[in-house]
Image 1 (cartoon, rainbow, N blue to C red):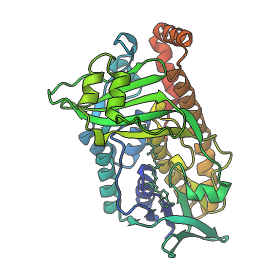
Image 2: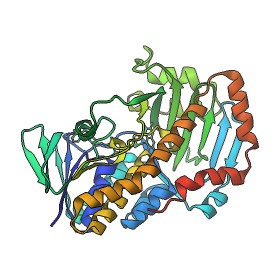
Image 3: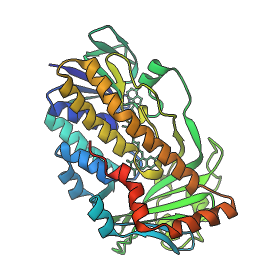
Length: 381
Ligand SMILES: Cc1cc2nc3c(=O)[nH]c(=O)nc-3n(C[C@H](O)[C@H](O)[C@H](O)COP(=O)(O)OP(=O)(O)OC[C@H]3O[C@@H](n4cnc5c(N)ncnc54)[C@H](O)[C@@H]3O)c2cc1C
């Protein structure tokens, strides 16, 4: 039986292991953390990722525990709506997105992996690999080794597998930092989600149902800037406290210790993802800014296509991985570039440029907005 070793037990690595088990490939996930913990509040799984999960038989479970998201709205910081894609237009053209809490998604993936007979080894950091013509061996921090027919580097932004393949290049800092959190407004209110644009800052709100919200916020900042001395919540209230409701209420309803902060990075798309029996997947292959909410969605698509190519390769691992890269590189490079562009537009700070941006968005016809989403949401794995 073909055996796949997967470095990294994030959304990408777990989904790849499930997809490979579904086609009868032995799958071992090596995760450097001592426990599998998805952090990062909520996550949007757009229609393209839901279609990929459908192929794995997981879409129904994900829909059942998540909330089907409706429509898309861009507002100004004062609350005025700049543009809106109505729910029925989005659904009619593409289908429905799902939003859920990250730990819930991880639970679904772990249960599916277990059911499919895959194995996740925790505390198993992959330091690198060695390969001969026929197999590949992952070298672990414990000194142990894991041999397989293929190695998939799904080990995230600072992937060790990528480093060994292509050298130690730093990711590109996008010029802004992002906070994320979960808030319970406790009033049963199920507000519509929106993204509000200010100058050099964005605040996004996503309803999770029953008064619970996932939110994210950004500001332009130098790389590695420490938290403000008054703490994250106070800094957020200083910056977003005068924005329209429910923005200040949502921040106030979030516990200080639960507010996450990450500087945002991406990388230039690669011309190759692997060599021989080794390839990359998810953020290890194509980290992107979160502006399109597509990082994990692309990792899920990668996983489904990878398994399809391995099945098609029928024992020829190298040919399968070449086919996988051929199918996935152009697609993901396009999404990386679109995300980066949207990030630049969203983070504009110059007042004149912001006025021009807002005017352009306000007059954009619905059919053009939908057409812009076509290449991303209309994709079939
Ligand atoms: C603010 C923000 C909001 C986002 N919102 C969305 C969204 O709404 N929708 C969406 O689709 N995407 C979103 N993303 C992107 C998404 O979080 C990532 O693209 C996704 O988590 C990538 O999954 P991954 O499995 O490739 O990598 P990761 O999640 O980074 O997982 C990598 C795993 O590998 C492990 N690991 C690392 N090194 C090693 C090693 N040497 N050996 C073994 N294991 C190792 C890590 O511990 C980790 O568990 C967002 C990102 C940010 C920053």
